[in-house]
Image 1: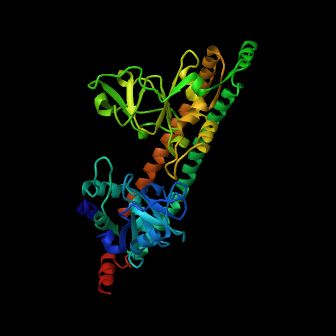
Image 2 (image 1 turned 45 degrees about the horizontal axis):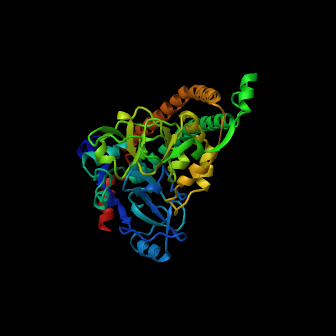
Image 3 (image 1 turned 45 degrees about the vertical axis):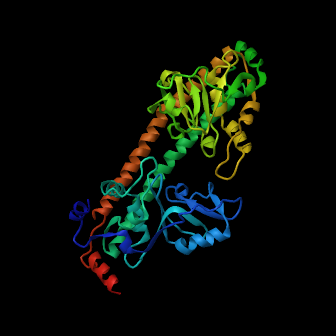
Amino acid sequence: MNSELKNNLPPSWTITKLGDICEKITDGTHDTPKYQSSGYPLITSKNLKFGFIDFDNIKLISQADYIQINLRSKVNRGDILFAMIGTIGNPVIVNYDKQFAIKNVGLFKPQNRICLNRYICYWLQSQYLNLILEKEQLIKGTTQKFIPLGHLKIIPIPLPPLPEQHRIVAKLEELFSQLDVAVSALKKAKEQISRYKQSVLSYAFSGKLVCENAELRMLNSEWKKKRICDVAKVNPRLDSNPDDNVEVSFLPMKMVEAESGKYNLSDIRKFGVVKKGFTQFQNGDIIFAKITPCMENGKIALLENLINGVGCGSTEFHVIRVYKTEVIPKFMFYFVLQETFRKNARNNMKGTAGQLRVPADFLKNSAFSIPNSALQNQIVSEIEARFSETENLEKTIDLSLIQAESLRQSILKKAFEGRLVPQDPNDEPASVLLERIKKC
């Protein structure tokens, strides 16, 4: 891959390694410090988002642990952070002086005389890099992907002359600022659709969604106040256990979409393999993510079409099985999907930071008003009719977001092939600059 890339580069460019253009590359602590309720933030790979650090879902460590970690991996303004485990990448340039430590995070300290931190950061965002990581087998692990520290240092990077790096970064930021405006508008439209859906649910369960005629208005006045445990079982056993050799659906948390109620049933396993150590459920059950942030994100689904009617999955799901003589499953599903319900659940979570969970008793004792089955069906029909109106628009927005990312990657590809900005024959070649710096 290096030779193929080099053959396409302008003469003034060269191929080098990140370890040759950074003063230091390290990866934070290898030990797990003791977490506590106050102290210094510990940033891990999962806290690196697209271009920023998420300080809302962090663990805190003591001053002693903070000092010990920073003897090796002190983060300064201008450094680049890189997720080394799980979702690899998500590079972030540190642009503030906030004190924190890192764990399982690559820390790059560029030599600015050779390479701009923004240029390196754009390279770490490119699909070109991902292809190299895959071809050179720099990523390890099966169930949990990771990149070793030593492999970070040997990642190749196409290096143009320093003045051309400035021109490339300026052009990228010009183009991406325009693209980001369009992406922001698309994401705002998605948020508006999400708010519209929540408004529909709010109207539905306040009795305002179906009151067009006298008959429905009369039925609407006959809602009965219950608790969820009055009309459903929470975390029940299966009605009947399959034989160990029977195939069942397996549903980890990542296979459940946020807020949409959609899920992926492509994973099939033998019941005997997954019956212990996982949550069990069956067709007609509602699964409700109990751990933060999955619960707040709305990882909730009404299960249908499970293989042989049975499934197993993440232990971080609560299961709700309604008494069908009292309530129809979809009515309950839409009730717990409400943002107001999830906010109330969030306020009743228990546990430590990053490990907060909704207790089963919250679900059992939550107030739940229901009309008769005829009105339940009518309300569900009205909800789904309104939701279906937004489906094509959501698909169009999602497709546009995919196209925007493809365009971003196309621009990056041109940049790292030397085709985004013109070359200046007066620029000192990158190879000459490298050699001169090495002799200093």
